[in-house]
Image (cartoon, rainbow, N blue to C red; front, side, top):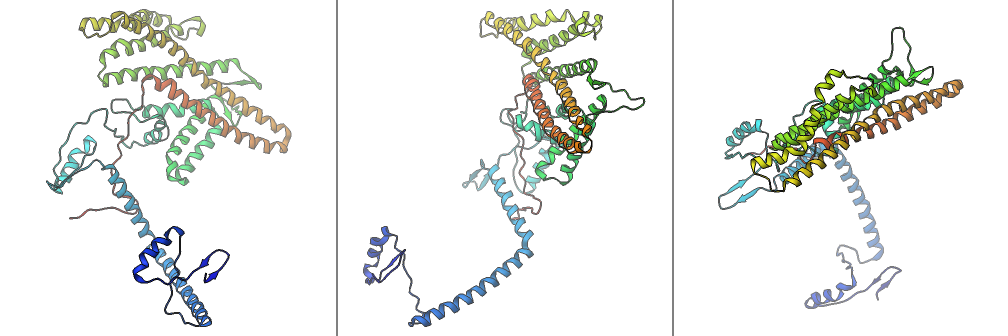
Length: 478
């Protein structure tokens, strides 16, 4: 041992050059670290230490100079580095999307396969042929093809923020984004009906739109629309931060309170409106199911199942609406017209598919089995119609709860100035918590009651290859 310390031992070994490789192999399991002897060091220890200290000072000064120049270079070329990083990222993503490309060394060719929107086909073809490429178009199969969404204002934000959580529509499905642009804010506004609270959401949406992070911009559209609808229903009920507005000539359509007590007439009005909205929403869902089945080539199924179920639901609603239980809101003569359609629809649902199968001789199952399936589908459809329609009562329930909670919070005004913090915190809590509950119930009504009628959401969006970023653009040259 030449030197000993707490953490290591230092050895000196003299080995001939012929034995060096063998010596290295012997020491390898022991994690030996070699100490390189510097020939430029003086042989005197004090002089060697002074030499090393001087070198440390010199190297430290050089490092400071390098750091300074590096910072100076970064300030000068900051955006160039960002642009280069963005370009590399764009190119990497493009190569990932073209991972199925085929290289043919024998033909000296590269075969690329990609989807493009039909309306852009000729434009893309001419551009590629100008570059010397040959282009061949094939009609994609419905199962594997992505769907191209036009960047329609407002609709694209609803599609990105809400519909994407359930799943993207496939090629042979109706895109419900256009309907949700109306119904989603409308349902939320009903449950969150208050002019003041709606105004807060409206302002929050605008702030998020113009000052929020880019990735949350799509939610700003939803917040703004929900705020507008909340103000609309707040106007119908005369609610402003839980205060019942009383103006000359202004009579709320849905007046929930009379002399600080819940009005049965107002509650009944809210319940009736929620059921009406639910019926219309479900009818749209049944109609879209028929449209989807025609698009998917299932015309017989649409004619014997979907359309009769739609007619049965509409007829049942009209007949029930003409009874004394709901104050005869639908005229009797209209109910008499639709009443015969109920048994006709039931017969088609149960016997339609078996009869068509017998006539076309395409049945692969016993007729009794097809009839049994028809009866089962009829029973399930009736149960779903009833439960789904009743489920929309939650719109009115949350509307009433929202009004009652804000009224209770406002009772703190009786404490005078001391009640101000309670009112502010209470109102803020209602906006956050009630807003969250209304949003969750809104999601449920759309995803369960509405989408279960027609929508599967098993598609994928067309993701274009982009070689252009915010700071950079990749251009290939010969």
